[in-house]
Length: 195
Image (cartoon, rainbow, N blue to C red; front, side):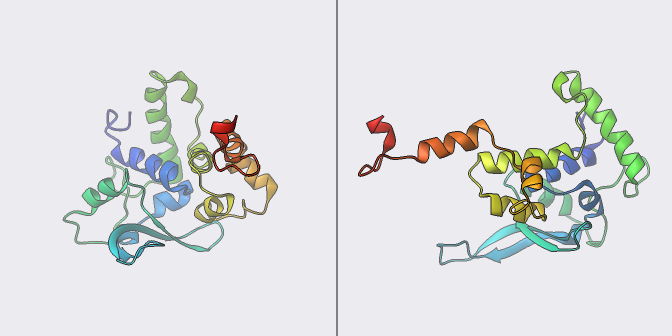
Protein backbone atom coordinates (compact mmCIF):
# COMPACT_ATOMS: atom_id res chain seq x y z
CA UNK A 1 0.00 0.00 0.00
CA UNK A 2 2.87 2.38 0.80
CA UNK A 3 4.34 1.76 -2.64
CA UNK A 4 0.99 2.35 -4.33
CA UNK A 5 0.67 5.66 -2.46
CA UNK A 6 4.18 6.70 -3.50
CA UNK A 7 5.22 6.63 0.16
CA UNK A 8 7.97 4.02 0.27
CA UNK A 9 9.36 5.66 3.42
CA UNK A 10 6.17 4.84 5.30
CA UNK A 11 6.57 1.21 4.27
CA UNK A 12 10.22 1.26 5.39
CA UNK A 13 9.26 2.81 8.74
CA UNK A 14 6.61 0.13 9.26
CA UNK A 15 9.11 -2.61 8.38
CA UNK A 16 11.67 -1.27 10.85
CA UNK A 17 9.11 -1.13 13.63
CA UNK A 18 7.61 -4.55 12.90
CA UNK A 19 10.88 -6.38 12.14
CA UNK A 20 13.23 -4.54 14.54
CA UNK A 21 10.78 -3.61 17.34
CA UNK A 22 11.56 0.10 17.46
CA UNK A 23 9.39 3.09 18.39
CA UNK A 24 8.05 5.54 15.79
CA UNK A 25 10.17 8.37 17.21
CA UNK A 26 13.40 6.38 16.87
CA UNK A 27 12.52 5.07 13.42
CA UNK A 28 11.81 8.57 12.11
CA UNK A 29 14.99 9.95 13.72
CA UNK A 30 17.20 7.23 12.18
CA UNK A 31 20.10 8.45 10.06
CA UNK A 32 21.90 6.53 7.36
CA UNK A 33 25.05 6.23 9.50
CA UNK A 34 23.17 4.12 12.06
CA UNK A 35 23.09 1.25 9.56
CA UNK A 36 26.06 -0.61 8.16
CA UNK A 37 27.89 -3.87 7.78
CA UNK A 38 30.28 -4.96 10.51
CA UNK A 39 32.19 -8.18 11.07
CA UNK A 40 30.37 -10.31 13.64
CA UNK A 41 31.35 -13.70 15.01
CA UNK A 42 28.05 -15.39 15.94
CA UNK A 43 27.96 -17.47 19.13
CA UNK A 44 29.25 -20.97 18.48
CA UNK A 45 31.07 -19.96 15.29
CA UNK A 46 34.76 -19.29 14.83
CA UNK A 47 34.76 -17.06 11.80
CA UNK A 48 33.47 -13.50 11.61
CA UNK A 49 31.17 -12.59 8.76
CA UNK A 50 29.80 -9.29 7.42
CA UNK A 51 26.48 -8.57 9.11
CA UNK A 52 24.06 -5.68 8.64
CA UNK A 53 23.57 -3.87 11.95
CA UNK A 54 21.30 -1.09 13.22
CA UNK A 55 22.69 1.05 16.09
CA UNK A 56 20.66 3.60 18.00
CA UNK A 57 20.19 5.49 21.23
CA UNK A 58 16.55 5.08 22.20
CA UNK A 59 14.76 8.38 22.72
CA UNK A 60 12.50 7.26 25.57
CA UNK A 61 15.01 5.51 27.85
CA UNK A 62 18.23 6.99 26.50
CA UNK A 63 19.77 3.52 26.32
CA UNK A 64 21.96 2.35 23.47
CA UNK A 65 21.01 -0.55 21.28
CA UNK A 66 22.64 -2.51 18.49
CA UNK A 67 20.99 -5.31 16.61
CA UNK A 68 21.36 -7.40 13.51
CA UNK A 69 19.01 -6.32 10.76
CA UNK A 70 16.23 -8.73 9.91
CA UNK A 71 16.94 -10.66 6.71
CA UNK A 72 14.02 -9.02 4.89
CA UNK A 73 15.14 -5.54 5.89
CA UNK A 74 18.88 -5.77 5.16
CA UNK A 75 18.57 -5.60 1.34
CA UNK A 76 16.16 -2.67 1.60
CA UNK A 77 18.60 -0.74 3.79
CA UNK A 78 21.53 -1.70 1.54
CA UNK A 79 19.65 -0.31 -1.46
CA UNK A 80 18.82 2.89 0.44
CA UNK A 81 22.52 3.35 1.34
CA UNK A 82 23.82 2.61 -2.15
CA UNK A 83 25.52 5.65 -3.64
CA UNK A 84 24.84 7.88 -0.64
CA UNK A 85 27.59 10.35 0.22
CA UNK A 86 25.93 12.08 3.18
CA UNK A 87 25.61 9.33 5.78
CA UNK A 88 24.39 11.87 8.34
CA UNK A 89 21.22 12.24 6.24
CA UNK A 90 17.89 10.93 7.54
CA UNK A 91 16.94 7.42 6.51
CA UNK A 92 13.30 8.31 5.85
CA UNK A 93 12.07 11.52 4.24
CA UNK A 94 8.72 12.66 2.94
CA UNK A 95 8.76 12.59 -0.89
CA UNK A 96 6.68 15.77 -1.17
CA UNK A 97 8.82 17.92 1.15
CA UNK A 98 12.19 16.17 0.85
CA UNK A 99 12.57 16.58 4.62
CA UNK A 100 12.26 14.23 7.60
CA UNK A 101 8.71 13.64 8.74
CA UNK A 102 7.18 15.69 11.53
CA UNK A 103 5.00 13.61 13.82
CA UNK A 104 1.80 15.10 12.42
CA UNK A 105 2.80 14.65 8.76
CA UNK A 106 3.94 11.10 9.41
CA UNK A 107 0.63 10.27 11.08
CA UNK A 108 -1.28 11.78 8.14
CA UNK A 109 0.75 9.71 5.63
CA UNK A 110 0.45 6.60 7.84
CA UNK A 111 -3.35 6.89 7.84
CA UNK A 112 -3.33 7.27 4.04
CA UNK A 113 -1.31 4.06 3.62
CA UNK A 114 -3.27 2.19 6.30
CA UNK A 115 -6.62 3.18 4.78
CA UNK A 116 -5.57 1.86 1.38
CA UNK A 117 -4.27 -1.37 2.92
CA UNK A 118 -7.53 -1.76 4.85
CA UNK A 119 -9.45 -1.98 1.58
CA UNK A 120 -7.78 -5.38 1.13
CA UNK A 121 -7.43 -6.28 4.81
CA UNK A 122 -10.26 -4.66 6.80
CA UNK A 123 -8.92 -5.85 10.16
CA UNK A 124 -6.18 -3.19 10.05
CA UNK A 125 -8.54 -0.25 9.59
CA UNK A 126 -7.75 1.03 13.10
CA UNK A 127 -4.12 -0.14 13.28
CA UNK A 128 -1.89 2.39 14.98
CA UNK A 129 1.79 2.58 14.12
CA UNK A 130 2.73 1.69 17.71
CA UNK A 131 0.86 -1.60 17.27
CA UNK A 132 3.68 -2.75 14.96
CA UNK A 133 6.05 -2.81 17.95
CA UNK A 134 3.62 -5.07 19.77
CA UNK A 135 3.46 -7.24 16.66
CA UNK A 136 7.24 -7.52 16.82
CA UNK A 137 7.11 -8.68 20.45
CA UNK A 138 4.40 -11.24 19.80
CA UNK A 139 6.13 -12.59 16.67
CA UNK A 140 9.54 -12.72 18.35
CA UNK A 141 8.17 -14.76 21.25
CA UNK A 142 6.15 -17.00 18.91
CA UNK A 143 9.35 -17.58 16.93
CA UNK A 144 11.17 -18.80 20.01
CA UNK A 145 12.93 -15.68 21.33
CA UNK A 146 13.09 -15.50 25.10
CA UNK A 147 11.28 -12.85 27.12
CA UNK A 148 14.68 -11.38 28.03
CA UNK A 149 15.98 -11.26 24.44
CA UNK A 150 12.77 -9.70 23.17
CA UNK A 151 12.81 -7.06 25.91
CA UNK A 152 16.46 -6.32 25.03
CA UNK A 153 15.43 -5.37 21.50
CA UNK A 154 12.41 -3.39 22.70
CA UNK A 155 14.74 -1.48 25.01
CA UNK A 156 12.37 -1.57 27.95
CA UNK A 157 11.88 -3.62 31.11
CA UNK A 158 9.31 -6.04 29.65
CA UNK A 159 11.50 -8.93 30.85
CA UNK A 160 10.87 -7.99 34.48
CA UNK A 161 7.76 -5.79 34.37
CA UNK A 162 4.64 -7.96 34.04
CA UNK A 163 2.50 -5.06 32.79
CA UNK A 164 4.94 -4.34 29.93
CA UNK A 165 5.31 -8.05 29.27
CA UNK A 166 1.53 -8.38 28.91
CA UNK A 167 1.53 -5.38 26.54
CA UNK A 168 4.38 -6.46 24.26
CA UNK A 169 4.61 -10.23 24.71
CA UNK A 170 1.28 -11.64 25.89
CA UNK A 171 0.87 -15.38 26.13
CA UNK A 172 -0.26 -16.79 22.82
CA UNK A 173 -1.28 -20.06 21.27
CA UNK A 174 2.24 -20.49 19.85
CA UNK A 175 4.19 -19.75 23.03
CA UNK A 176 1.85 -21.99 25.03
CA UNK A 177 2.11 -24.72 22.39
CA UNK A 178 5.91 -24.50 22.41
CA UNK A 179 5.82 -25.13 26.16
CA UNK A 180 3.50 -28.11 25.70
CA UNK A 181 5.70 -29.56 22.96
CA UNK A 182 8.77 -29.21 25.19
CA UNK A 183 7.32 -31.60 27.79
CA UNK A 184 8.76 -35.14 27.74
CA UNK A 185 7.85 -38.06 29.96
CA UNK A 186 10.62 -39.04 32.38
CA UNK A 187 13.16 -41.24 30.66
CA UNK A 188 12.15 -40.25 27.11
CA UNK A 189 13.66 -37.76 24.73
CA UNK A 190 10.76 -37.33 22.33
CA UNK A 191 7.36 -36.70 23.92
CA UNK A 192 5.50 -37.00 20.60
CA UNK A 193 6.40 -40.69 20.20
CA UNK A 194 5.06 -41.47 23.67
CA UNK A 195 1.83 -39.48 23.50
